[in-house]
Length: 417
Image (cartoon, rainbow, N blue to C red; front, side, top):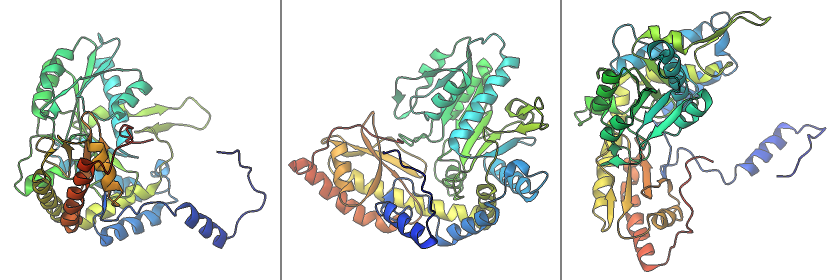
């Protein structure tokens, strides 16, 4: 990009609108039903509720909530309480609204590190033991906070390799992680078995439910088989669940929840050693837009358990139909038996990346994984209406690849760049 100069003359409102329209010409529509990548759409009514609440507080700063915007800590307290209730936390639990899943994970890592200074003083070079599929936000947090990551080399039937994790625990291990479910394979890790390791070795146990936290509880309510994953499991210390994914709040908002609110002492950063007075935060961000917090409160109060349950029912029905159709196409296979709102599939006969390219050329927006190369579908409640079209195009895409009409260029999957 050239080094553009800051223009002396500002643009008019119409000029701004025209310039933005030009820049957005190739943007994809997030709520397009052909978007199966990261479209957490819950209906026009929910989007309106979230947007209106956001707009009322878009100029309010959460850091000044106690002194200037008392509605914001009130919203946050209720959102945390609803999240704790949803994830079966015991009395005395605590939590915080963060700016996203990465911050929730990062703050959990920081809190575990500081907790370990009191509870595991012999861990002089603290380490985290991760399943193969744990989110890379743990690596990012470990880099920021000076911990070492021990990530497993593989998975067992697309779930965490508990035996390998047990072998990786050493005198410097302070934290162990499970995902419910992880992003790449979408199969819930054996949380109860991993938590048993945490109890046996006195480790901080975090369950990353950023994707599944607002899906799995309602799938369970609907009678679907869901492995134990939440605070009902002894040994689970903290959980993350994204409000801006299947919680349907506006970005960026997520929950970091703690089994015991007393652990917030290790989470909090506080200092008075400067001229402006006491400064205390529970997360990494200082100033925080009040809009996402307000939108989370409004959506959760608007939908209630019944509203979330109804949307999860539609998601799981669309998933069932898609999986049946995909497995009915020769050479395609779903990875494992995913419980949440997304899943991944591969081709055993052809280049999966080429199939993804052929689907992209048919205007489908898809996520991709590697190790193995996979196509990932993240569903929302309206995707039941596109099942037949998707499967028809998928059959055609497989034929295109089988005949050599479509060949992948060879680059690997890109999650975020």
